[in-house]
Length: 120
Image (cartoon, rainbow, N blue to C red):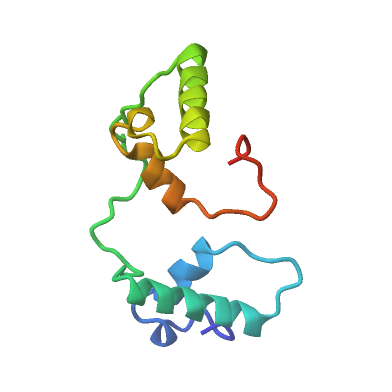
């Protein structure tokens, strides 16, 4: 397909063309490396159940719905940081983490060697 992209028999579904257009082109990238990137992308899309060519996708700009975000004041953010720091100093005190949020987030974040509590 890369040698003759105009030959539609090489890409009947349009997968290669669409992926080629989506992937950024790397400076000095050889055609073989580009083909491998396209192949890896298609393999990944198939493994997660995404179709490379989606006929249901409308063409043109679409109006997206709004995403609700919470607006927090700088004082509220500072209070959150203070609460987290107090919990990190005393993780056994359940009163400092009544919802368990701090514990869950702490377990999800990787611990880095030499990282101080404030950076965490």
